[in-house]
Length: 319
Ligand code: AMP
Ligand code: MN
Ligand code: MN
Image 1 (cartoon, rainbow, N blue to C red):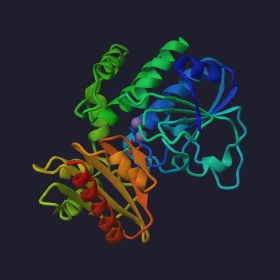
Image 2: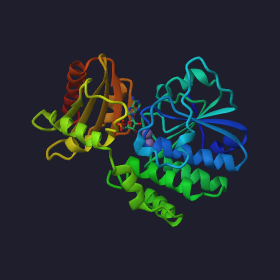
Image 3: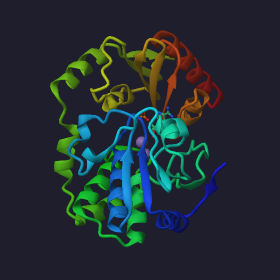
């Protein structure tokens, strides 16, 4: 189990390292990327050698984020020396992919997932934070570094990603205040939103296909969409697709299934009331109470059967 640390203890751990590797989680989203990029900049200002890594493709949605080109994709069999590995916005070790084998160093985990497994040596966890980006903003202010516009943009992207532009139940006065401060530092929300919401045509073409798969279970309380293996393309950002089943009247749990390999199905869940982080954990995944994910080692049809059965069970048990 991790040693739980406070913000100030986390700061001290960072202060004592000269050479730091920061890692974002696989299937990288705006929170893990923005939090990592902002911390990297802050640490560089204090004179540290900083490397940022991710063991996955970064969606072109995030190409506009300052510093995104500096990510290293670790190679199997390579070893990267460092004093400290900082794991950002990840609740379990498998979320960092092969970085687990490539970097052997003490781990500081900065995270906000209720499902955190306590895998790191040191864990600064705030499951009341809207996004890891909000925690990072607090940390950077305590570090007394200059929060540049580039860092502010990254932190803003992190926050809005995880609360759906202040729409979800994890939106708080504190995250809105953080965003307000970021606007005072020069962030222009309309420009950020244009970058994030503007999609290549192929995204919308895929969305058209995926909407045709919209299916309901349990008298319309569960709404699902799916991407079969033929249509699955790692380079197409599908993160926003789940909002379609999510906002159908009567749907209490929305699920998106992606057949990433013949016997491997990625699952995203969004809910109004049951705890989907628990369901995700039972399939070795994780997340938040109302937004969670997992990967099921089965084909799409089988994964769908297993997961829908589990959701119906949970709904019955918690009525
Ligand atoms: P997603 O549905 O991929 O947007 O993920 C929703 C939330 O669950 C995010 O906070 C993710 O970091 C988390 N999550 C998704 N997949 C996994 C997984 N396989 N293991 C742990 N956490 C996950
Ligand atoms: Mn994330
Ligand atoms: Mn997050």
